[in-house]
Image (cartoon, rainbow, N blue to C red; front, side):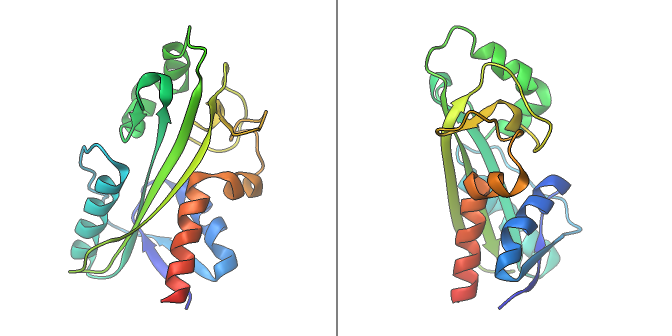
Length: 186
């Protein structure tokens, strides 16, 4: 099973990355013409599920929604599900300032992907990638907090990795591969 699936996002970088991850499975995503309704919640799964359920109902066909967050251990998991807002307001520089004085720079990127048909409950797929926060922003690739995130055992930030390497290591890659395997096995 392959074909195009509607992806509810306004972020063309996420669309490109998701399509790169899913292309080996013969799955292609198309940006849905529907606003992603995001609730404030304590988990990525709640945010993605609500947005997927609402979008599937509005559009009347199956949709895919993704929500990701950067979880920093020394900051009690902040920004977590509020990462988009934190990026818009304080950005990478603000996070680096918050990390001043912390020896523990461990962090993880987490992702929740929700697939939902109209009138059905969403099916969730998650992914995570451990690592740490760099001391400076580096790299010109990627988006969001990629310039300050070092994957586990890597000296390169996600923004310094080539696209294929990032997709193989990332939280988003893991979640979308799980979705593809489920979809093709269904």
